[in-house]
Length: 82
Image 1: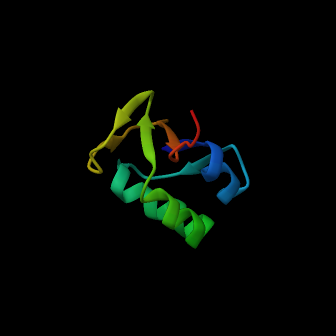
Image 2: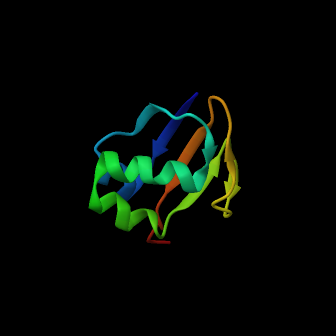
Image 3: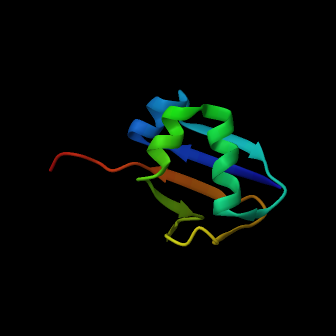
């Protein structure tokens, strides 16, 4: 199983890439986020606390949301401006 993660705005700046695909044996969003934190460090860890997540194009607020085979995860930090 692989999860493709797309980063936007400040999240992209924190990790240095727009897109990455990581092996993940399956589970939930709450189980996958520590994988990202371990890979990218404290700046991303802090940022993820206020991000919005989309799994396969659907907004997800429940950390128990499943990540299925070949899921796509979008990480969107708060946007400023207007």
